[in-house]
Image (cartoon, rainbow, N blue to C red; front, side):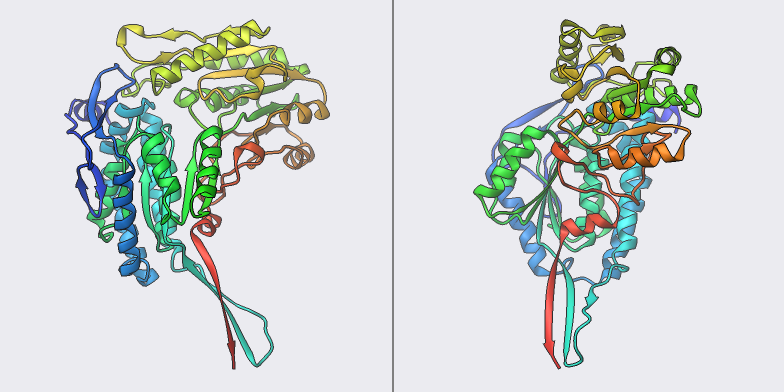
Length: 494
């Protein structure tokens, strides 16, 4: 990846985008369109179709036709594997093009976007392709005159709604196992970051995925998203995003056909540093990246920092130094460590969170201001606020921006109480040199993921999901296949 290649791709024109339904780009039934505004400079890149319920209905019907026709749903696992591997290869082949397209759309720094979006998506598709002919049904331990078989079958039509921070990576976490299991899929991308998923669908078709098996319908959540959630012929809905929308989707399931709903709803993850941290400088560096990369727009971001009193001053000095070294800049410049905030709305929310925390008594140590205003884009300096207490909104509520809440603790019991003082339970981290402390904290923290002496980096082989109001969906690993398959029992008298 070279800067010259990136600059060449960033200057290319992006044509007006259509829906991708039934194996081809197709216009929406209505004529409504949405501007695609780049967070890098505030300019309109292109437009996307603003689909409504009628468009969603067409996409679901095409998906159902493909499913019932059986060229994918009843294909031999080895045949599905072959096409999915070709699909993964095509994503890799076009990785830089896709990464630049995504950065222009949502502002993630290119170094992270390249690995986390197309390369991660390709790896995910390849993982489930390899798994598809290695997952077996069961033979029950019955008496000799009966044969009990447990078959795994695809559910049918999978609706996927993904967020704007990593639409391709998170989309692949759901699309990969859904396709591998034999389902047809209808994706509703985020209206402010739809371009890469439209390109993904084109590549799937090029790889040989039958028409109608993967469809992408762009538009607003309140129209296209809700129509998908309410559709009577969607069998399962997979969603990553806010708690408010997650609750709405559960209501839609109850109001429609009781479709299964899998929710990953973000978090307010604690990052806990004990006095016996093995390498305080490394821990500070990783902790800074754990909250500030992608401008804090990461669901598992370590947004609450708990530091034991004995090392508080030393650790904070290292943290401030590590943060100061992070360069906020043009996300398509390879020298930038942090890119743009996804939208003006999100930028204002971040700035308001900092101001409110100060009003409630938190002490701002650095950052928390809009910067690079001359660019026309949405940029913010990383904010660190100390003396944040569990009574403050900044301790309890997800900001989804480069805003770190810091407090100190004295004992392990204090750390556990502070860590769990949140309605969320997605991720967490513990820094300690004692294995016994690490094991106790893994059990005590109410979170779906507990990192030890690191933050982030868990790959496709392990599940990602949360406790409490972080939802109950599980992406990644072989466990994700459970969300997109059903069990059928055959009880055969011999």
